[in-house]
Length: 331
Ligand SMILES: [Zn+2]
Image 1 (cartoon, rainbow, N blue to C red):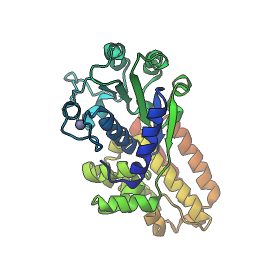
Image 2 (image 1 turned 90 degrees about the vertical axis):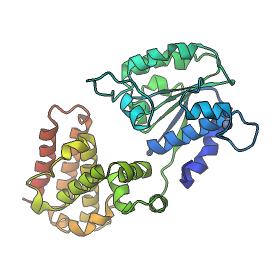
Image 3 (image 1 turned 135 degrees about the horizontal axis):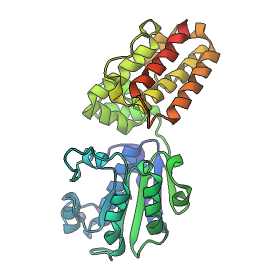
Image 4 (image 1 turned 45 degrees about the horizontal axis):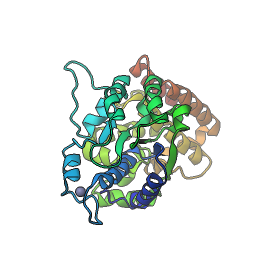
């Protein structure tokens, strides 16, 4: 189990809610990876068949099947890319990219499971993660089952972008909103996990501690590119060329980093401390002479771009646009 103290605190909340209702549970907050871990851990306890107080016991048949990934009362609805990242066995046709969304076919594949009675305990579980990577068609296909789940069928939806969920789905669910842990608590935890520059990792992961850990442990090149991009924006003398390879970071992330730095610049122009990337503050001395208004305009432009960022017509062009916007600041 995660050593994150704030998740341990949240675990009893989740347990209480699942006991109080059979409605689908919607767990959301600004740290989806951690929330997924929380839900996984809770269900591990539910599926454990040991009579002892310590669950999961990791010894009983229920635990064995769950650990082997073939417990008959547990299914996941995930984009293939996420499932692969989490180490699930996924069949992806050769030459085809793993799906980035939960597909309508994924829902159809579970129809039998939705309708069969539980094979071991009283309940069967479906974890939908992340619910924000589900398009309207998929969500509609799922809605019917969510509205009238077969006896014992329990849904847990996990994710961060509640605004991306169909209102009809949201209204069926009991919500559990997870508050953000404090920055100091996150930094301490990351340090304990052996992350070398916890402040930078947390900053470039938009303050999601689990994302920060995963970047530091599994995607150091991503972490480095994000950091380089921010350094580049913070130094107006270099504004001519965005760092090479930046496309790999993905446009939504690039734009969010730029918007967050923009807010830091506004704070700095007001003589305050920006709280997104505190380590960049010494490099932002030039910001004062630019003035707040131009940063506000820039922020709005980035925000407009962000709304379209998931389907850019030309990612490189969009990146250059961000660059140009910053370049004009110091002219
Ligand atoms: Zn067990």
